[in-house]
Length: 154
Picture 1 (cartoon, rainbow, N blue to C red):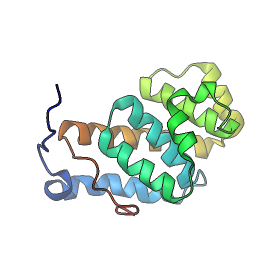
Picture 2: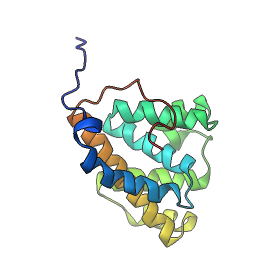
Picture 3: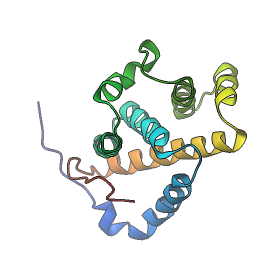
Picture 4: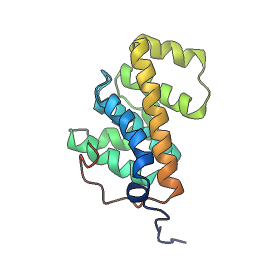
């Protein structure tokens, strides 16, 4: 049965001070050599896994605005079985999924080390933990998806 989602707390309004800490991480990551496209792709995948509708709406819009294909977005949940992603993206997605599970096998780490410098891997991990925080906040307070406009939080 479908029930309309009602927001519990408007975090953007009532949690401005708390959210500023996360915005600082986002500002740092925007300057990372990883690039916004890769980070948003990882954020989109983690938001799929965590079931955060608000973040899925936001990252899909940002990715599409920068030219990401619908095919790659639709295929992201099955990225291992598609030819649409680079080796670097595959390493980032495998790393993201492992970090999200809090279980990073050596083979995932070694593959990530082939594609990323140590600094980039730290930035990627920070990006994964940040999207997890956003996902949990938006899910807990039922932030309503659909109203995000591209670049709204830039």
